[in-house]
Image (cartoon, rainbow over all chains, first blue to last red; front, side, top):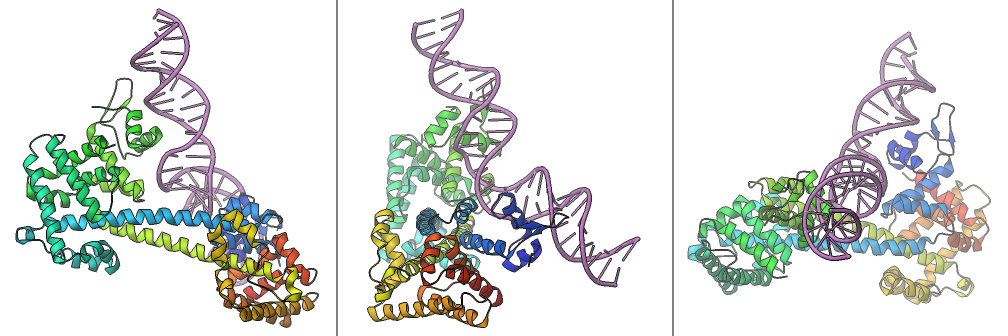
Length: 248
Length: 248
DNA sequence: TATAGACTATGACGCGACGTGAGAGTCAAT
DNA sequence: ATTGACTCTCACGTCGCGTCATAGTCTATA
């Protein structure tokens, strides 16, 4: 009848420590103890435990569960509906992060493609030398998502995008020995910002500035971008930060 | 040029405490300090901070961010793709919880409808006296979701479901003075389990047992179920626990 | 020039749900 | 009597800060 910790733990698939913890916080006190201090769980304790685990599976906090199981007048249905809202909100936040991640990945893909050695014979966005490697390592889904927008463009759009990017790169490369705060540099960065937003998804100014730092902090990007001119990556990063600060 | 904590904090929209924390954990040490110990952040520090906030927005841990920004050879793109997987996994877990919550809500709705005083003139599942109140309090979406499956049933299906539920309730009510472990009781509970799975979504045995406890721990359910016979809720809860334990 | 007010510093607890030892006692079987 | 499986009670670590508490610094005004 009365079970000890390990029996209970094995029966319901939790750890002994968890039972100790539930005892500590007053969520589930065993009905009895042996003279030597061993916890003894009754059938009633087991039933309460089942309730606890049900709500735990649903994502409730132990505090909430405690309130719920200790009061028969507590409206479980209302609690569930409120809890549901919380879960939806959590999911929304994760979706937000996923969107931002995807945006940044797309941006990186575009960047890599743009600055490859193929650039002097026109960019072919439907072929990416990094892609096979990427597919092998991370599976198709991630790569597909990252490529989705680029892949949907036709040849004409691709060429016009690559030309636009190249134009801005070249302009910035020419300006890179001046100040990143100059009117010309800031204008070019403004176009850069507009171009990214149009083609890769919209960035907050904060994120835009962070992106600039990414150019200089990752040697792969630095290397690629600097093909347009030594020190261009650093120059762009500085200009992007200034742009972000001035635009608000 | 060199900014103090509050200036930086206000500029990028974080708290002073956060800057202290980043200093503490070695994520962002300011380049300088005044003689009295005030932190002084350089432009370079600001740029690093922008990077940090970019990755923080994407949901990276501060530890990961630290690794990332401290090594130019760290592959940010790879990190992003791995991170993306983590986010997807997190979302999957939340979706799982949402499904369980919805299932349980549907079950509660059905329970409430079943055991209302209308039961002697046939159940009308398209009308629920609790529903208006529910809509007022929690908005339409939650209620709609909870009702979705029931609402889609036609009159014939509804009547057959209500009859099935009533039959099982009555059988269990007749058995309630015997043992919840008896063959007859367990058979009836088995049908109950099958019926729930068919009409409200599938439950794990664990969850099924937890559900039984819900009948007795929430006085609304106890009251409603006991309309079929005093003590029926408790009897069902016991029988469901036994059923779950024996079925694995 | 004294004081108020805005800012800065360090230190330390708290949160949530346990995991992971450490050190020590209990119990049944060999 | 020993072994091995089990039990107990501390107590620290996790993660990203929020929130005091206490104390020092700097500037502008009465």
